[in-house]
Length: 287
Image 1: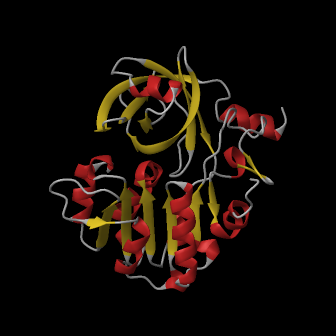
Image 2 (image 1 turned 90 degrees about the vertical axis):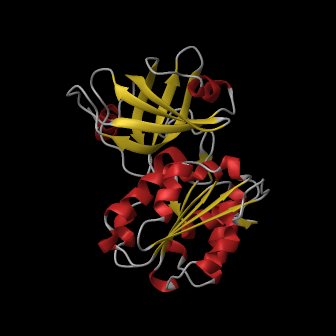
């Protein structure tokens, strides 16, 4: 067996059976599913990586891992958390699953956030909308090991207060010592006393030393472009800004080419890329 073939086999080219053991309603159209192996589990996921999740009778979509938990019953593998928004036939099928339902999962795929590269410096986590899902494991890392990092800031943006994910957890993060948490919405509702506007405007509230800062950004592409450009303008090196890009993915293994972005196959070379690499690609309209 060749090395690439062995690597694909190690990431389960065929979906493994998982079952839903918990479903948490996040917003009106978004839920987090806790998936436990029905037998053998997948290899451990790193923050920022994704899985291909198969809804029986509907199809398969890439979904970032929004957390991991210890599994039960002595089975190999972690319990995976996937936060899913109902926007298409497959994601709507996954969103509608309930405890006891089965799915197929293969992975892990793609690059991760690589938090180790941020150790010793200040850290910015900037999320827009559903972009908080793949960043949540990174935030948990910052909270679990604060001694490894400098000043830590988590900045969140959403369309409305009702669209903010993990609201109870975000409140707990806000109370954590040494962690700055800010949130802004486009359209405030009754009782909202936070910021109104884009998440980019919150950067002025964060305290960081630009040359030694690592920034992790995920959200709508227009938001990531604006955030990365503002950070570069403030002196953060482009290679220390990491973004998670999204394109249509079918195979997850770099074979079908659907996720091509210029010379990059995002399922294989991404989804997490440094802005020094992602910025020039996103600047080409044809891509």
